Length: 369
Image (cartoon, rainbow, N blue to C red):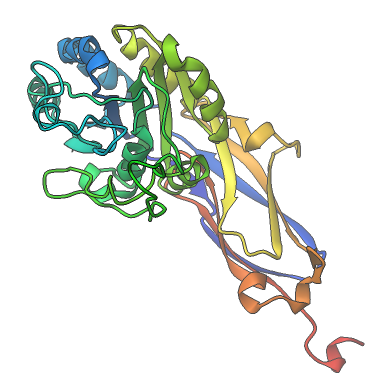
């Protein structure tokens, strides 16, 4: 039987460890040659990206051919962003709020436009109706858009068994946490990391919450198994060279000024992503350490290993119970810090090895003999 979905084995186990005790577990990972793929394109809709949008509209047939080449089971969706509709990010004069540029739509922060769908004809038809918008300052509010695309899973349409790719296309730098605090906009509360899309797909909290931080995006994209592909023009490329290094798996491509090469960037990025797997332990109790090794026992940088699609990769997970956490002995920690379920999983997978681990401490004199 030909497996078409990513697999991890084993998927469940339990262990108890004495303080300082260490164990190794063997783990197998399988990624199909052509697995399910969800591709969400998130595009900067400021006025300077007008020619980029026009090019994307003309790429319907080429885009269909590419996603068909990448996967036999795909969906594709689309979202757009500009920035917070508040000064100084946006020109708040009534005439500019109605139409910031000729033949443009009113400004907005983020809008989810096309839910992930296998119907490329419908996708292309809906995309043709889109018009550019505009704002004032150079950095854009793409971080708000990325966060909403990650946490609004049901509305975006991410499938639990698919590889999730988010293509982020812009020519501008980005606003990040604390940029929402300024003398004109006032101090905004921190982003609450919740989904805030209205029935029309519009982000509703852009003027009430700050932009998210870089660590927040790294954590949430990892939690929801979303891999970012940054397609950036030369104008702001250096900003994203630094940004993408924070993600366990991400790709970065230099976008031509009119986005004519966006499909080439996507294809190359997908090949790179499929050739490496980053495996990490999530939700570890404080008292438990975990490290993923190659089958030979070597440690890869940032937990990244080469796995050829269609083949089984074998790894080892080294689990250790700490003796000290900071200056505190492990047995004096709260029970919730000594016991819990951690998930060891590739960043591209929804399946994981779930390990119920507990540090076993001596509780009576009879155990201390």
